[in-house]
Image (cartoon, rainbow, N blue to C red):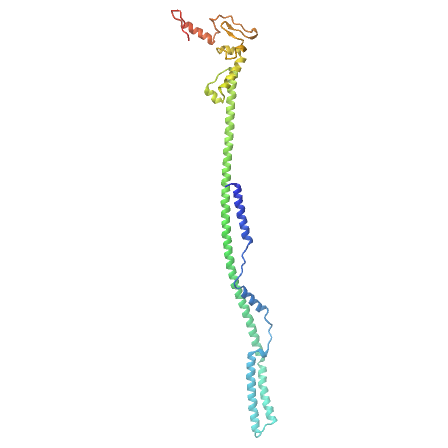
Length: 313
């Protein structure tokens, strides 16, 4: 994988993670509407006000007391009328009214109890509403908590998957870097070896050129190949050496093609150097001692037969 492709995959993974983080789930509860209704009931609940007319218990007591008071008043008035011979009198009415008012007073005496009972009912209803609200809130909180736990678990798994992918990319990048380093090391080693080979070849070439130009030596094919020199190059160098060293030309046993004019000419009577520097007075039968021609003459003399014929080499 190339470095550009690795960077592209990394950027894509990071962008996906950023999108996942920006779109957080809406942690709502199925109890939300019920919670809002209970909250409204608690907040908007009217303040306590005791109204006997609206109190069923008071109405029950009142009905009972009024009935007992009327009955007691009738009984009292009847007893008073019996005492007066069956005729109604102001006394009987007064006594009956007093009896009736007694029962009404009893109704008044029970009013604090009825007020307290109404307050307790109001408080109990409020406690019940708040208890129901608290329990509903607990259920909603638990539901939201479970949803958040599921989200956290999914986020954790996603983070782990991202980390595994990141680790894989890091390992792959490390392998590519190691491979690149190895390639670079191999390339550097190859360059170093090529430089060394070039320097060795250049040195061999220079040594061979020096040997030829200083001694007129003609190397073999193996030596030329080892020095990286062609035979034509070696012959050109040797020819240059021989042109600069006429004696070496004579000692070599002959003139190379095209060099007779430069050497001053070679005849059967001897060698005549340029500018009259050297003249040979030797006869055709004698050669320069140690030369190739002299060696041929000596060999012919040794090989002559009785018939006077010479054996040619």
